[in-house]
Image (cartoon, rainbow, N blue to C red):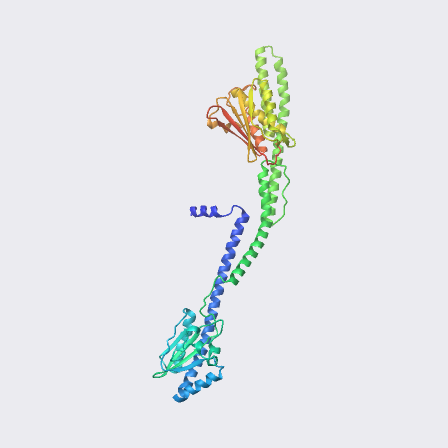
Length: 490
């Protein structure tokens, strides 16, 4: 069952609109197939009823003709036949032969069975004759006399006008009965159903044209309706993708079907609540930071009044660390709330500027490659690159930055000469306050927020940061930034 579901999922379109179209096509085809099957059955039953009535009437007429010829003296039978042929207008071709004329019997199926059984049973009952031959023949091969002359070779007034219907050439019903020893009555006639043996064509040109027109009409109307229904869903999907990056995006239009409008309203309500909670969190941490500044300042003043220099220095260092932790926590929670407009920025120029600042502190950064300006928030991206390069220079004293672009994605690879890190720590170091260096000094180990803030900035630009160990040693930080993207608030 699971394998069947996987195969169906592989062949089904991925979009909701495509799946609706497939369902509509399958439904229309199934409905047309069922309607054609029902219609065919009804047409076949109607045709069989018509043949049953026609063949019964035909059999009673043949029985009357048979009784009439039985009542005639033998010498007058040919005279009557000649008079009938010369007069014309009869629905039968009748002849009296010395023997049964061979007929190339054609046709099969329930239609023929109905006609043959009706004619044979009625004639047997009406005339008390067991030897009744009922067959169908093609007009071009039908023979009517002892000398086996073809019907087409007879004079027109002898019956061609009643049995030959060019260009239809319907099958001719031939009934032969034994009047007396060596005397056979031959009756040929048409049933009035020219396509009795043509069968039913499922894919005739008319039915195929009607089926295609119905299918196209249903698909056109379905696509119009499905597009109208799925358009709000598409807007909801885009809004959901943007929600993680931009909480200030405009609310959705709460229109459309009742279910879609309710979903849009719930989404807008969720967006407002998330924005309110984040704003409340920022206000809370801002208040905490503000409230902590006053006691930290008082403690610093008291620490300066200590007589022991060693105690005074340790106390001030602890206060400095506490102050930096408060600032770092606030910056992490607020996500570096740099409200600036995106603008085309030269990535290489930013890297050279940061490299020059690090060179003054003893770090060495080399740059390889360049790309055209990228639309970003310059100050935020500079903070992201600075955090990555500072980590690389701190652990490896030297870093190599490779810049490249492929398929509208700018990639920066920062490779340092440091010892790398365990694979289990590659994703953990992005968490706040996680440091692999044990020192708490702001000039060595830091607060453990740099990488987390850098990745937050990268993801706000639609990109990401991934860490990996280089095969030859050192750590590689890979920053990707898409060129075609909307930059959200940080």
